[in-house]
Every structure is written in structure tokens, then in C-alpha cells.
Length: 414
Ligand code: P1T
Image 1 (tube, rainbow, N blue to C red):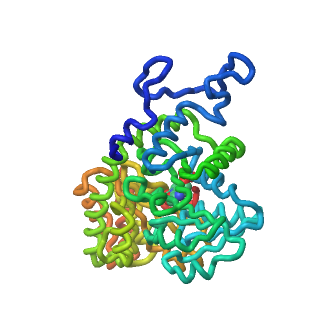
Image 2: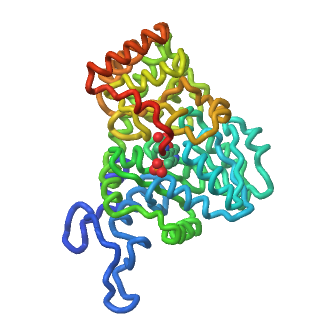
Image 3: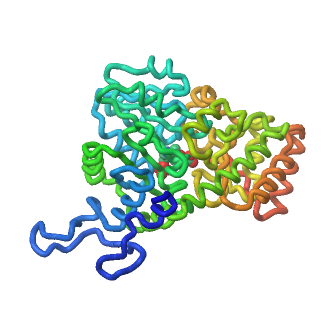
């Protein structure tokens, strides 16, 4: 069956007790047993819950995986996957990852004796040089967050030897646009908070694999670490996932239109989007991905204050962390999503003060472009700092929809 059909039908059998067409929210922590050990396959919701199982079946089908385990967040899934390893093991990680992933690896796993080396995975020689005798895992984000660099999954799989696992974070592409397991990866991880849920109303994560032994270990870790998805969140994410195909097509076509618009502006120094011919790995994108997704980053000309001004001047693009919802978001990675990465590291990756990341929603592309145009024009790089401050200040008073300046200065929160 095709993707769009599986998205709606996989795991969604009518409820056996009532015939309810939509899988109910099984809001129960426990299940009554008829005798000790005699039950209908469920005994305690941390271990398994029918709403979660329905979602796991649906997501496994979308990723064309044999197994899926759902977690309370993307980081919950990451915690479980990295817990497959032991103290003394080593992970090679792509050096441009979500800031929270960087924080987990450097601030927590390191303390438990699980070392990691961050490396530019677009450079295979650098990856080879980073491999140690105790390397047990390659952790790949592709496209990377927020620089939209691509990692060649097949080439990475070719590097691995027995006993090593290749893990791919497929959050940005989703299974609609990229199939890491088919390219040889061992585990796919998702923040289902993003495109899979798709409506910015639920936190979740998932790990998929074709390997029965890994799946069994992940199930063990799911119930043992306890970062499980609630039945209500499972319902929301499952409902969102049913329209994943439709949404991804819209995200990608809107993003392409916006990336093209941005690339033509003199006051935008650089646009990062794998669908642009100017992207250094455009060929790899065409080979590895079936579409380019909805995330664009751009480096603006002018000082950091201009990027902050743009971020608070857009009206349809909400200034917020996260991505992948139907509504458009704008984010200043250096101060927000990637604030937990030290500045020197950020600068090395290109996460400068002038960088903005857009999560392009499924509103009208025409309206989104108009919104970006007015924000860029209002904060033109050629205006003086004084006139910018004046323009921003007066607009704050006159326009109730405008985000107050203080909100753009917040400490990294996620
Ligand atoms: O937020 P959570 O569901 O725990 O997912 C973590 C995560 C994992 N992988 C990728 C590629 C991600 O982008 C994220 C979360 N990212 C954001 C919140 C963000 O704004 O980039």
C-alpha cells in the first residue's frame, strides 16, 4: 500500500470492545487481570497501552520498519537509544545537531562514561579519523539542525563494522521524504513533536528498527527508563500522522518558493535549503531524499540586532522554538534552540548571530513571502541602528500583534 494509505489505516483497526472507528484514548494506567498473569496483552501502561501500540504500528508502517517504540519526547527516544550502549563505549556524532542532543551527549552521557566525538559528517575522512576501537554508534542528523547540511547515509553505513550501529535522526525529512533503514541504517529516531504530530500540540518521540534484538532492548529500555508516551499524546500524534503526506508536500513546496525568494534578496547573505541548486549537496539531496522538507536557514546581512528585529517583526511566522507544525515559526538558533552549544562551537558550525531558522508552515506561500518581505524591508540592513530602534519601538506601540522586544532576548529554554 502507498504511504498516504498506510498513514491512515496502519494500526487503526476498529476498537475490538466497541467498534469505535477511531482508536480510543485508553486513559488508564493499569489493566484488570482475570487471574494472576491472565490478561488481554496489557498489564501496566508504562509497559504497553493500546493507544500507544496503535501509534507504534502506524509509525512503523510509515518508516517501513518492523518495530517502533514511542517515547515521551524526541530526547526521551534519544536517551533510550543511547542507553543501548555502556560506559566505555564511544559515539561519533554529526557536529551540527539539535542543541538538546548536543547537551544530552556532552552534559549527561559523558558523565556516565559514554564519550562522543562531534565531527563534520560531510567529510568522510574526518569521520574515519574520529572512529576509535570502542566506537559503537554513529549518530547522524540529516539534514542537520539548523544548517541543513546533508550526511550521505549510505556512505556512513559503508564505514561501519560489526558491532557498530548507525542511528539516523529523520525528524526533518520524515519517512515521507527519506528512508534511512532502506539505506542501511540500524535505527531511525524521530521527534514526533515535529512533522509527524504536525500541529505543535503534543510532545513525542519514536525509535524504529528492523532488528528484533534491538527492538527487544528498546522495549526493555522503554519500560525501564520510563520516558513513555501518554495515551492522549499518542492519540494526537496518530491523528496528525494521518495527514503527513499532504502536509509534507505543502511544507516542501512553500519552502522552495520562500527559499527562492530569499535567495534573490541582496540583504540576505546566504540561504540554506537542500532544494536550491546553490546548496553544496544538492545532488546528494536528489539522490537520498524524495523531497527537501520545510526548514530553511538564512544568514542575514547586518548586525545581530537586525536578525533579532526580523524575528520579532514577522507576524505569520511566530517567534518560537520547535518546527514541523502547520503554522510557520521563526527562530534565532544562537540564542534559542542552540544556545546550549558554546559560542566557539556555534561559530565553527555557522550558527552565527545573524542566522535565522524558518519552519515553513502550510499557510499560503504568497502570504508567507509577504510577511517575510515586510519584516526584511522594515529592518533593512542599510538603515542605521538608530532608525531601526525607532522603527521597531514605534511599531511595538502601534501594532498589538507584534511580539514584545523582551521575548526575543530570552535565555535558551529547550
Ligand atoms: O523536543 P523533542 O521532542 O525532545 O525532540 C528533540 C529533537 C530531536 N531531534 C531533532 C532533529 C530536533 O530538532 C529535536 C527538537 N528540536 C527543537 C525543539 C528545535 O526547535 O530545533
